[in-house]
Structures are given as C-alpha cells and as structure tokens.
Amino acid sequence: MFSSRSIVRAAAPLRSQTVRQAIQKRLAHAEAKLPAGVQDNAFNRERQAVKDHAAATSDLWRKLSIYAVIPCLIISGVNAYNLWNEHWEHWAHREPLEERPEYPYQNVRSKNYFWGNGDKTLL
Image 1: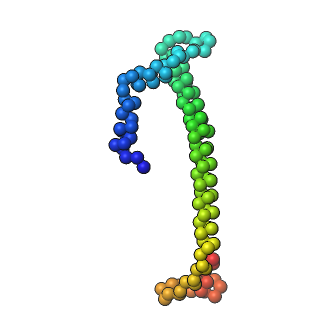
Image 2: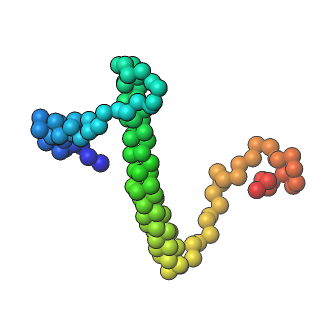
C-alpha cells in the first residue's frame, strides 16, 4: 500500500535530535518504585523497570485493541454487509441463467460407481 520510500520520508522528522530527546524525557518520567523490604540495588531497580515497562506496554496494546481494532472490525463488517446486499440486489435484476450445455468431456466414467445405479455421485 505504501512504498518504503514514502515511509522513510514520512519518518524523517522523527529522527531529529529534539524529537528524540522529547520522547526519551517522556518515557523516563518517573523512577521505578521498589516494593517494601527489597534491597535497593541495580538488579532490583532494573527488574522493577522491566515490570513497569511491561505493564505500560500491555496497557498500550489493550487500549489499541479496544479503541482501534474493535471499531475497525465493526466498520469492515458494516461495509461487507452493504456490499453483500448490493451484490444480491444486482443479481435480483438480472435475467435467469441459462441451462449449461452438456459437453462430451463431462461425466467421463472409466468404470461405474459401486453405489446406486453407478452413474450418480453421492452429492
């Protein structure tokens, strides 16, 4: 849908230093709080930071699922319903289809089926 060149051009402003610093400041807004009774060392701080990041990321995907995916599914369902109705309305105005001719290459049997009269399929 989008060429890679247009995506790279659109993302060019995001590579600027000021935008990058603003994003980093926003993401580093608070220091991780450790639970009571846990030593304050680098390992525990890093572990708590990972937990906080996981919670924020899961919250982001939950919000995306609720506020982006569900409305898109509803809109596409309504669109499919409308297209379905338009299609059958169009077919209702057509004249009936003609019978299809029997060609010699259809229903070629090298041996009869072993049920019924041998010529009809199960369907």
